Image 1: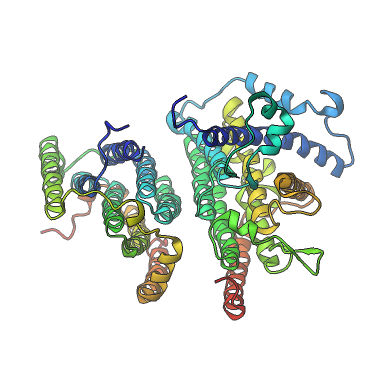
Image 2: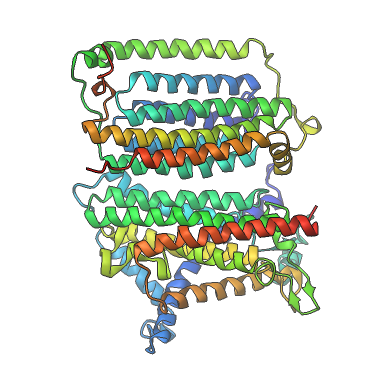
Length: 362
Length: 105
Length: 173
């Protein structure tokens, strides 16, 4: 084998491929979860015909979407029409790539359990590697940057469809996304101030330990509780979900910017929306809920806690969607600019003051 | 990959000079106000590249800070320029700069 | 590896910029400019400034270009108007355009010569000679030595925001 194919390279590639497939599987799981949770909130059974307890429903959905005819309005701009869902989906996947989901791993336990040690004598990597597709030093900024790029998929879809509902939906949706990005950024600027680092891994590592022995030192519980609330609200608005989904509401705008899309292009938008939800949940878990730290389990199994916390936040997302009524568009924009952004700025100022006063960090 | 020549500071400076010239050509040759503004952004980016390249060569951070300010000023200038374009468009319904000749002799 | 990446990104940036300047449809120009910004952001990462690379994407590609895109969609001018009038034919015809292209190639050559005369083609400092520039150093210098420029820039952005809103407002009639 050439010299540059080291076990570390193979481990990195395996992690990247695993993250990619895990995201797609999580989108499928979310489709099922959403329909079941919606059903239980509305006191009915959800899908129960396809497979045991309806577990194969996402498969049926995907098959249906693939088999549909791919339509394109004649006056639509061909290149932009097809690029828009690709942009949305790419931004969604790329944003998750810098999110770490576990502590440093050297795979020795995995190798022992799965028998690789017995087969080849390989006892794990010599140096533990980070469990993330791409662990960079400025990880928080990269997530913010790629979330800004996600706006383009929406606005191009609205424009390229060349239809009234799509254009209105696209413009409204992208205006909403860029407005709530400010509160999003300010809320995690407060976390960066407290943790004194831009790297998500270091922010998570600052959240280990307990106060008084049993209250975990997560930022979402005590110091940055309001930042956590602001982040969750802004995250929900960013992903065009739950009470802030006016631009894609069926009753108001047909389906907003994805009115004219069918089959795989629509599936890509659908996928992008669910993966954005997963990314926002994962970032909230890492920044505010202590990431992969939790009681009872050893450190190298911390990714299990990560999945549990992300799952809880996703459940909360879906619960909110089927419980709360929708905001009207002007109420939505007013809330984002007049209430959420000043709250985030005040939170940042108070955090900055307290950080200087108590000499937290360096 | 030793057959690929290693980029030196000169490579970055020449790249930035070429980008600057492309932006200048766009400002002078295009007859659409928005494309002219886009070409100005291309020129500003070329200058940013020069700053960061020389910064790396001199092991300093001042270049990156100046890039930060250039970006902010570019944002302010783009916003104001586009507002002017919108105001002009409302008058003449065209984006061709040759239509706005009332100050010429 | 870095060398190959530099040449690929440089070629991408130049091709995207040439297409920005040469495209008829302003919507495509905006998207190609975003591609050019992406290539430049990659170049900044190769030059060891991940901070500048990410704020390039956040500010330029994520905010300024969205502004351009909104204006292009609002004004809905699909392609460039054909040249009409005496001044237009004088400056916008095919002959003057080719002459302009030749002049800009001359400008590129002259600028390239001008910036590379004083600098010997030495390599970048590498290995231990290259100090590790972190965001901490940038922040320290920004808020100590350049604090006045920082505050002045914030006032500038406020003025630009207010000015843009006033300029683009519909007249009361």
